Amino acid sequence: MPTLEPEQLHTPSPLRIGVLAYPGCLASEVFGVPDLLMISSHVARASGGVSAPYEVSIVSPRRRIAASGGVPIAVTPLREVDLLIVAGFELAPGLDLDATLASLAPEVAAIRAHRKGGAALVTICVGAFLAAEAGVLDGRQATTSWLFADALARRYSSVDVRAENLTITDAGVTTTAAFSAMYDLALNLIRQCSGAAVARLTARIALLDDARCTQAPYVEPQLLPDAGAAFSASVKRWLDQHLRSSYHLPSLAAQFHVSTRTLLRRFRADTGQTPLEYLQASRMRRARALLETTDLAISAVAAAVGYQDAGTLTKIFTRHIGRRPTDYRSAFRRRGVPPAPVLLPPS
Image (cartoon, rainbow, N blue to C red; front, side, top):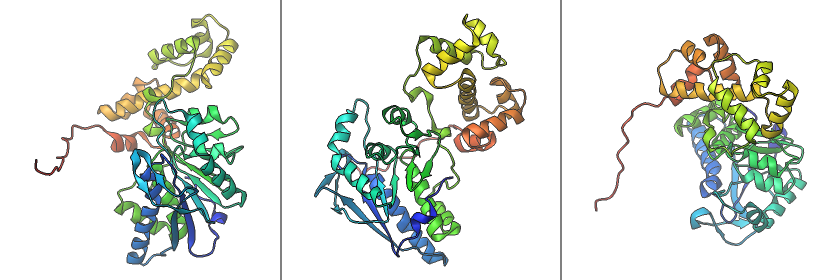
C-alpha cells in the first residue's frame, strides 16, 4: 500500500497537521484522521510504543464554516503546517460542480500556496477535485472514490487517475479513495511515525482493516456512470451473456460483422477498454456475486465464469480484487443476520 513519502515527515517535533475545512465539507472527514491519531497516541503510551507528537488544527481562509448538513465547525486561520489534509465534500447527484468549485476559490488558492512551499498534501475522497482544481495533481497519479473517479479523469485530463487504489502518494501529494480510506491514510501515518505495532493495535481497537490494498472489492457496477455507445453496449451485452465461453477476438469481431481492428478501435473509443479487459472485469463481478451469495466451491465458481480451474480464477481474482477468493468470501459473505435492535428513548 502506498504511504506518505518519508522525506515529507522529516519535520520539527511535533508534526504540524492542518485539516482544511470549508463550506459543505464532510465533518466526519475533517475529524476522522485527527481522532485516529489521538487514539494511536493513547495506544502508544499504554503499550510502551513510540508516542508521536501531533499538533493538529482545523484551518480555513474563512472565519466561519458550516459543514454538510449545516454542522458548524470552529476553525483557526490558515498557518504554516507540515501536512495539510483536505476533506471531501457532499458531491450529491445533480450538484453543479463548476459552481461548487468556483465558490471554493479561497480554499483552492490555499492548497496551491501550501504546495508551492513544498509541504505535504493529503486529499480525502472527492477532496481530490479541489487539489486538481489547484493544479497540484497535474502530471501525477491520483485516486478518489471509485464512484467519482471517471468524473475526475474527464474533468482533469492531465491527472493520471487510478480508480482501484486506496491511497496514492506521488511527489509529496497523497490522495485517498472514498470516506473510510481516510483511516487507511491515518494508519499509514501512524505506522511511519510510531511503528507497525502501534498502528496494528490502533486498528484493532478501532475495528479497522489494516490490510486493505484496493477499493476494487467495494465497486458496485450498477452505480457507475454509463459509458459506451450503442455498438460497444451490444458487445458488452454479448460478452456478459457468454461469460463461460472462451474468448476469441476474431470470432467476436465476426459476430458483429467488423474486422478485429475496427472492433478494438470502436470499443476502446467508447469505453477506454479492450473487449478482453471488459470480459475479465465482468467475470470478476459475477465471481464476486457468487462468492457473496452461494456456497459453491471455488472450482465451481471458476467454471461458472469461464475459467478452467480454481487456480486460474484465484490468480486473476487476486490480481483484480486484491484478495484471494476464499478471503473475499470470508469478508463479504451475505448471511441472514437479524438486524440489531435500535435503542430509542421511550416515547
